[in-house]
Length: 108
Length: 160
Image (cartoon, rainbow over all chains, first blue to last red; front, side):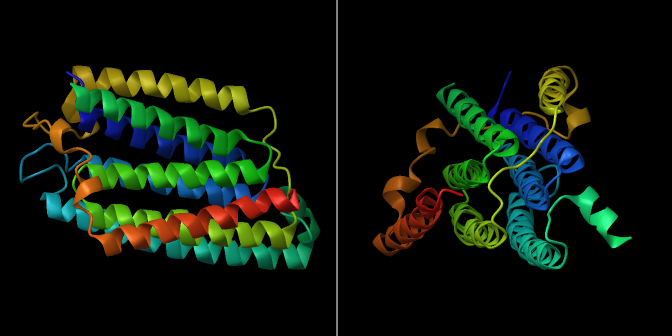
């Protein structure tokens, strides 16, 4: 039987894999940071869904534990993205491009 | 049953917006799609019992991070994103992954980290947060939404 937990867990795992694949193939640093946000979104969704089984004890711990982890993950993820975007701006100012392979050539 | 249908519909919309965000060539379209994906996941968190996490998700990702993305896009002047010829390959892998994960959840729920089903139906209380919010919470939420949407709509006026 398909429950909400299964649906959201599947969606979360799929989003994580989609984001990782997009990070691997991305040729733009802004796109890379966007893909990281997708990974984060999927991880948060999967973590949140692990506490949706209606009982007090869940896969990770109690429902409160999963919610706390999601809260912490949101805050840390937003900070990491802010730092990543600052690095992107600095890289663009120094090299004039956001293509990682071109940046690698310009370094040598 | 209505709860499951609702969760499937929301998940499908989240997946669609994320696919648009990842595979769109215009960065403004990607940003708007990402905004809606973050907002929808915040709605999921709120609807399924954690309004604080949902509000934090909306304020942080749909508000602050979207504005940060917008600033970086305007500073760098990036209007198009090149994803190469790997689009179809990624979509095929994603489709195969969906089938595998759904099959695993049906055959062996323990393998994908799911607990035994002691699940309670939340269909009656799914959207009860809509009328349980205090006026100040609603005001803050509407302000965040409005400011984020006005800022993102600025993308179109600059044609980036």
